[in-house]
Image (cartoon, rainbow, N blue to C red):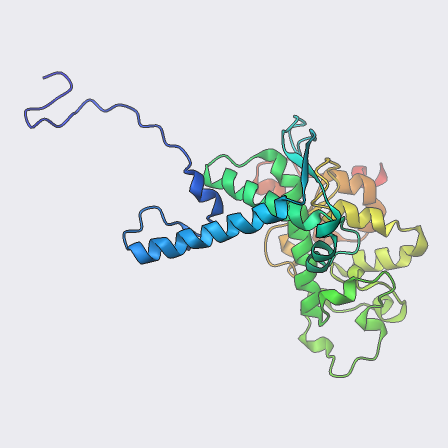
Length: 296
């Protein structure tokens, strides 16, 4: 019997198109998904959670004027349709305070919330987008800084002022270097040369020394922008990638663009060079030719 059996059950299956459910854009963790939840009260609780997230984002969005502008993809060089944001004065104070990033523009917090929702949406749809990589990598570095600064014994408040001094240059009651992960413990240069605490977060002693020794020749604003400006979706390619616990040097990777632009800061950083090529090999990519890159 063509397409059916005697019991009336169809045997000739037709393709079922699987589509992303619009409510799942607000699913930020596996336990947040209410689709398939039978218990009415539990389902309602999850739905309310989604609605609250959507409301907060829409409320923030009222102060934001979306301005469509293309940007270059991290890997492919293709143009994307992701929107850039222009802030209003109303959102300035809250954004700056919550983000706690000295060089962040007023709209950075709103962009981060919007971007994370957008990235989760594409991930849940099973179609992560290459153009999200540059902002994701910079968000990871931003989080790595906060975690490593905390592991050292400082808070992110130490980072807010351009005039802040590293804890290694101060006498701080109760501070003990023994509690710091070995990769983040200070070098002689860190102890003796006053410097901004944000240079302490790299888990590579020689890199920290190179950055501090560079003094006024280092454009730290430009370096900070390359590493952490997740709100700037233009592709420079000069950044670092963090694949795990940020205090572990083996979880870090440097891009080819970073080597070309900041090569003088990488001299003697053998750990970073080794870990980078390990990660590249896992992706079946050719190892970077360090000597050639650092001399270019």
